[in-house]
Image 1 (cartoon, rainbow, N blue to C red):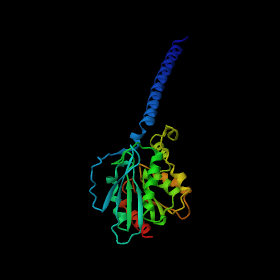
Image 2: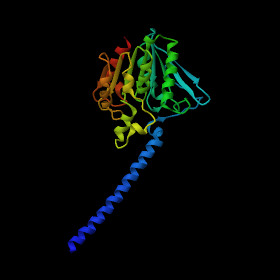
Image 3: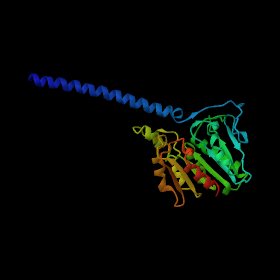
Image 4: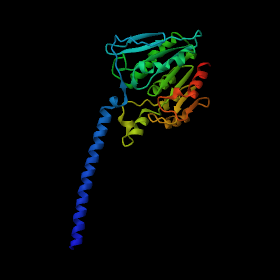
Length: 282
């Protein structure tokens, strides 16, 4: 063997060892990341802020703080906001996003109450003053509990179901099984795996997540009119999610695209507020 052949042989052996070494490192990182995603997904997906049972909300709007015991471990907490208009049009069931608690989303309440709508806003298990273990089925069950409260006050054609971000899948599921006046979705996702896959495309999110919330499936069974608001620059739940939902909408449904809007600023745009006003006046 010539000196050059021997050198190339040694070099190839070294490269092979390096390739194997780096392949092991990549595999360890990939597996560790997958294990973390699977076992820590609740901490990754949800960011609640819990509140003491004795905490008193200080909202400027007339409201009632209501606790509904479900069992020995679960308590559903909701805030019942009264209409500030003299005309009673109906009630809005508001399902909020994955952060903090009701106090973070109460700033949106006047957009509804000024049009004669009461608003029921719940906190999910572990959020605010609600207690219990969070599961997808429990989200649906609690939404149904709130719907039953609303039905004791108003007929179905006076109930608007509203979902924001995480709450859109919950709202869509409820509207697919119960009659309502309208379903309104703000920054909806196609399903939960689609959101996670956007950030972690290397993992099979559909098979790893405990939460599916398949909005696209539920929309196919919603008979009420559907209005969707989504910003084109949304980097949390991308605008692509709403575009993917279009094939499942009825001809009378609508996607309101807010040019330049992001995930949490759609109410700064006149197009959002004006459209919502027109829908609530119907």
